[in-house]
Length: 114
Length: 115
Image (cartoon, rainbow over all chains, first blue to last red):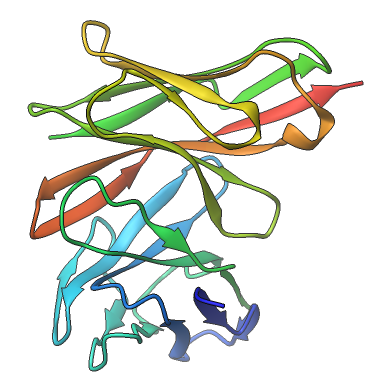
């Protein structure tokens, strides 16, 4: 089945550690996105990528980093510079060409700092 | 800048009653608009989308939305609520250029259904 796989589903991090969230898609989509979700704030865009080896900062990129070495993979690293990393993280992908293409979402990763 | 505003962070209706979730957008160009639904601890699922053409858009699970350019609105409705409709709903707009687009989401509306 085609879709987007995020792993792990739950992740615990100690303060000061970097962690990497995985996102893989087999939909052959060009565009991929990372969103952060906090209660009452909706989804905020962290980074997005339209093609391999290229990505752009979203609205809240500070403290995060990404790579897009393969079309199907878009991992997100939450660095120690991110002061409040506890949140629900959602990865999405879309065909990317044209504004009328909807995004398909993974099941999310819940990150908790302990 | 293009944006989406959802009026009401929480809406509660009785089972069988009309569901109305409000969404207004700001856009300097014709918008592409979406409604998504999210169940607890899950990703988002597309309910419906408006691109061009007919302004009344029908989606899954009996939901529909009407694009009203004069009111810059894209409200989501369902004639009769079901307990399984309890979830969080997000309105979204696609912004940018054809070759570099991104999707901006509203803050969400949590829908509760009373027995």
